[in-house]
Image (cartoon, rainbow, N blue to C red):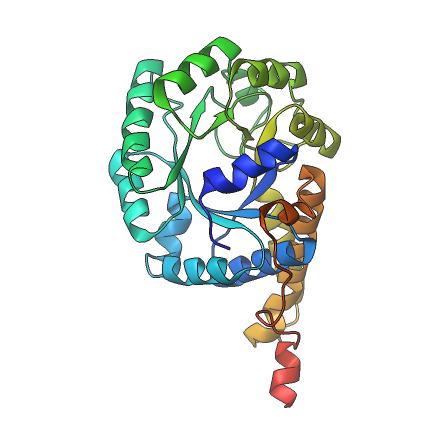
Length: 306
């Protein structure tokens, strides 16, 4: 079921769980992600970063939309960390059902103006919008010192931002970082701050940097108002570790032999994160229809032996 991000996240918000949003970089990852979420009966957001979009190309979106529309669980396809109005409009025209405009590094008033402009354009065609205030630093911070420069979101700023922009859901900075953490560094979520922001605003909250965070803290943040959790590094790390193991055998040359172990490793992370977010089984709140004939039960090896 292809839905807007607001439909997917809003329902999760009302029922007290979070929708996991996974960044994917090719069709195999996309299909495995949707299949595992169907198995877990979990709604999901397919996140595509501009760098990933450049990799897969525009034509990829038609396949993604078709797969999402035929899925038995709610699926939104979201542009992740869009940086300009033109980029976001391009994504909307291409068929993304939700977009994120990230003006968090801009001065506050510029972030407000850019977000409001995106919201007006997106809402006019039924596309939902995520924005961000506060900063959680660079991707893959190299040291603990880099993580001390974060700008945490305040309840007052969040409330003013939502009122000024009419954004559908809001990413907040409460202690996580993007990507992989430096050795010996573990994030510590400011859970009280999540609660305070939840009391100050009436839209769902988003946690970026869901990889590497403690499971118990993420689950508690969800109980306090987080309704979307972004995940990339944990899933991709599992995928590429498994892929490297397979490729140590020089005789491996067929994609249908090489990729399945990596996709299986990825699916294990997807299932685990759905459980951490409380979204496993959550499809029942959307008019869920159990998976039936859409997903084949056979393997590539069985087809070749046929």
